[in-house]
Length: 94
Image 1: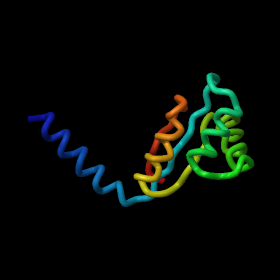
Image 2 (image 1 turned 135 degrees about the vertical axis):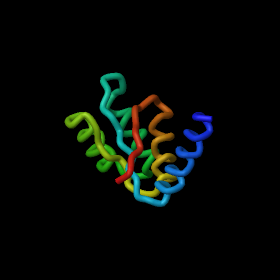
Image 3 (image 1 turned 120 degrees about the vertical axis):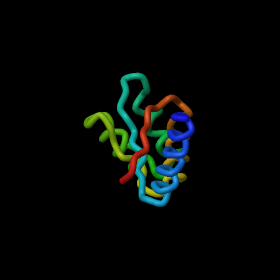
Image 4 (image 1 turned 90 degrees about the vertical axis):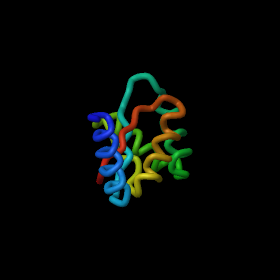
């Protein structure tokens, strides 16, 4: 019974939060080359190299950076592209 209640609660919370603004966060790591991260951000956001560089630099300096703000589905899409090369991400409400 507890599992069923947990699932219902999770679905209810997810339904409520989907309409709210979210953000995709990228975490710094020591595994990926700077250029690879820049290229993947460009792919995820369809942005120019300069913007992707600034996001990469912020993640490197601060340990994380907000890559994208928007609805949950779009944040999830951006995160999935970043994860293609093994980058660490998190989505949370903005």
